[in-house]
Length: 365
Image (cartoon, rainbow, N blue to C red; front, side):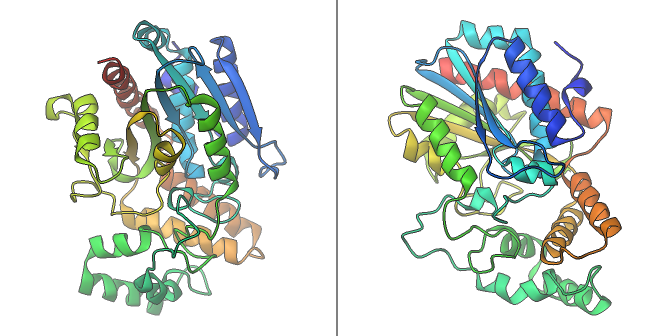
């Protein structure tokens, strides 16, 4: 086992090296799906997949990172630590559970320190049936001129307009309107796209390659940006299905010590969302009983996180911005989704390790 801090990297390129080295040293089967574009410093981008266990295992746990690119600084660290954790690996082997690590679902966002894909799409809003009418979010359309003004930082008048709307409708309503997903403004916040992204298509390929024989499928998807700093909220990542929620709580609740929340009953810090990634588990692995959570670690208060996201999207819309401002905005994004301190990283690893053990126990029960 390595020290927790040694598992976390300062860049996507270094995170990828640490993950591939850890998986190779552990004897895992590795497969890389290269992204069509280069990274921020010209590096190769890829969704890297490592399988720890037999390819035909009937019990499979997926552990994924960087669905929202910049959140990969945290998620990758958890995965790297797990590849070196022999006690954890032995526990999974003894239970007959294979573990599939999917490193950097959105490598482009990870490298560029953005939350979205190279298509400017929020991957976790992109899993829609695009042959059908897409959800509408008219209130977001009303707010976008204030959320993404022409100048940055926003003027006092813009800030006042948002504050006035929030005072009228509430902070929770603002979070819900902004984060639930929208499909009309391609340069806007939480844009779900008009077609499947590269990351969506590649993830489906991975599931077809590795999860077709699975009978019981667990999934821990690692996220950051909501809730109290360092606290990992276990959000049920499933349909509005009482049986799936009950299984998730049986696996991960620890008698109420680590509650499993739901976007459907209002218990989660997350709003009710649309186009979520776990849809792929049902669609690509219909033969499997699926149980999953998003493990969501808090970083900064939501208003600060939202301000970082607004700045990032403003920069995307204004690529001619001065380099110093661009660097500052990228750093602001990183700070909003990754707390670069030893205590925070230690908290992350302890909670993730507990969730990993619990998932294996749930799969083997």
